[in-house]
Amino acid sequence: MASEKDTPASLSPSELGTKEYWDNLYAHELQNHSLSPTDTGTVWFSETDALQKMTSLATTHTPQPKHTATLLDLGCGNNTLLRTLRTQGWTGRALGVDYSEDSVELARRVGASSSGAAVEVAVWDVLHGPMDVVLVDGGGGWDVVFDKGTFDAVSLASCAPCDAYVARVGRLVRAPGGIFVITSCNWTEDELIRWFARDDSALFEVAGTACYRSFSFGGHKGQAVSTVCFRRR
Image (cartoon, rainbow, N blue to C red; front, side, top):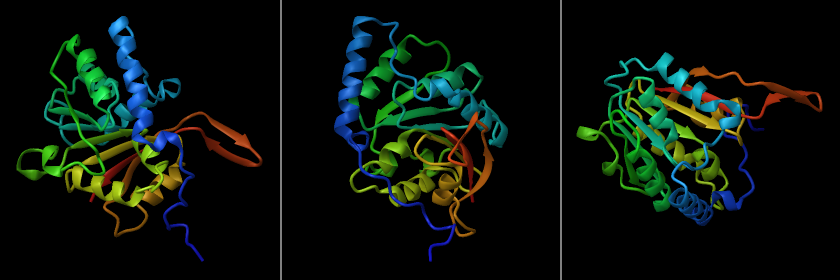
């Protein structure tokens, strides 16, 4: 019998788990931005205020001061998250990566008009990209790593390489003490914990969670979005 600490069951594959879907979406958003520079693209989870909750968790649980903490955003899209952190006083090195070239180009163009410390962007596949491209000087991990929907897309791929993603993130977060802040609409808070901090041998432990408006259905209570902050052991 499976225990509650086992990894969750895989999700059914979806087009949202394909690179083609995201390439098409960001090609469209890049074209829209070219026609209207004020159109900076989609801000994922904006209706839930997830971005504010993620930055709040990072502020609470990062041991490094804002002016030195290094920041990495996996699946950065238009890089809204890192640009928002810049406005909140985070001035350390910041890098947004995405496997869609048009996503990265959109982030570059939108970021070109932003003031403050620069935010780097690069084309990089979190599952298959060479680690030395993104690891900080000396091959170390980042102080704060963010994921706002990327694990959702990974889990909808036909091969659902979720365990590989967890292992890769473990290498990207500074050990010990670095944090990983993730927001998902496909996995519950409990399921995220079972993926990343299922037991004492896991690479992560839970540092904090965010509260969202809850709903009840069929005798069960839950929330549409989950955000968890994990600390690297």
